[in-house]
Image (cartoon, rainbow, N blue to C red):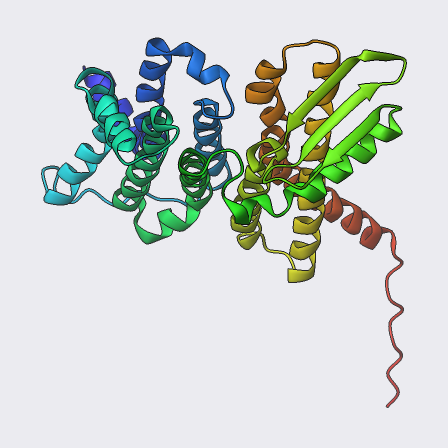
Length: 341
């Protein structure tokens, strides 16, 4: 017992830093045991929550020496009791939603409000509630600076919840602001399919562009899909914008470099969205499992890139510093100036 207490005293500060991660790891593990299939879906599933946990871990790694928990003056102070309660809130929410009828109540309320995809509202609400709980936990533990340090995972989770809610309320491309970019995306996808040798027919007259691709060597191999903003990857562009802007804001580099990094990342994200649509059509023409790709592997293209891009930025900055330091080391010393008296 004394050994355990000594270890807690020695590593207590490190354990406190890990509490926001543990506060969500436990309920997510519980949700996985309840519904493992939901973690296999990128769109309208819980795979994004795994990326949320990954982002928390990344922030802890990058800011481990800088972030410091608030000092515990009185163990049973109102602030500490509020913090402990906040840590338990995600788990309490899982119990309320899955065992005490909260999810059913949310779906019923959404159905009565005329929301088309009312059955998806509990998941959207879960994302939004978890985002709020995370902000409360970070604020009580690290203060206002903690909210800035952990803004990326908080905004990421909240953004996904908002996107799910918008698609539930305005399905099938009815949310016009997000749908504006879709015709251009569909046109570029049709051009790429044409470059691959397929015949394409694109109709942009309706609310959703309808694209048909046919293999000229075998006219029976054809695929037709309507393209809405979730299918075109608009959500990945929005998530990229949130993550990249918040990440680049903290980088000690010039604003020109930040603009360059953002522009390159956005262009790659947009190209990946086009590639995702092209892949869906090639799978459809080959009678493959379009639904599995559409709901899991397709979004994984963009999210894997978005998650990896901050690491790419850090790696490129480290490489650039090494190159410049070596270049400076090879330069001959400046000749000393003669001083005439």
